[in-house]
Length: 308
Image (tube, rainbow, N blue to C red):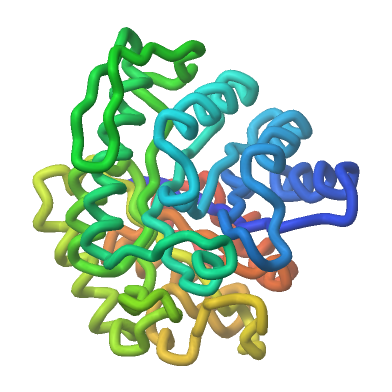
């Protein structure tokens, strides 16, 4: 039985000192990973600098992204940056990667938002390029979207064979790609093809269980760590105006955890023991007071059967 792992998405702070203090508080409370998103708009730090600072302020806490938008960087650039971060953090990086999807920021930055299939094909190639460069030695790659001619990069990541790769998403094609290439899968709601936001038809318990079933059919299922983002904790709160998250249709899934500390801990045990979901990422920093006592109870514990 896999132990629980807990992450929290932290987006910004008023200073470097305050950012470091947030990272140390997460570490002290038993969280495993500090994650940052990757958007060009909204109240969010840029990932590489923020994660480097968080890693330097802590000793155990892992750092990662939920998730880098592949369209914003050439994979050779990201491979170099990520390898450097893995070295500087002492091997604590988790690389979260996705296609990029938010139409508004593409338009604002003058970027073309290609159809989902094109973006997924490009992400597949990016994963092959990143893994190839991390293996070491010159890499020649001739794809439809990326071409490399004998490129060799140093440093290589500390972690072997490479830092864990997280893919997040909800559509069948993305989940099949994750089942093939990822070490960690963060299950979410499928995004509309036009990049306008989550698809409400893909929410709820039946949709969530169907995604788990798709992953179970993968030959690599036993090697996948399965998780999700928790968008409501304790008492239901209004949606954040700056966030694309919509929790209205997520009741009955581990993405909405209402009730007391005991209620929430019992729900997490259920999703781990019955469905193999072990990695829970807090989406909103405002829910830290309600979620932290649960993390302190369950973090790092095996299937102990204890209820506090």
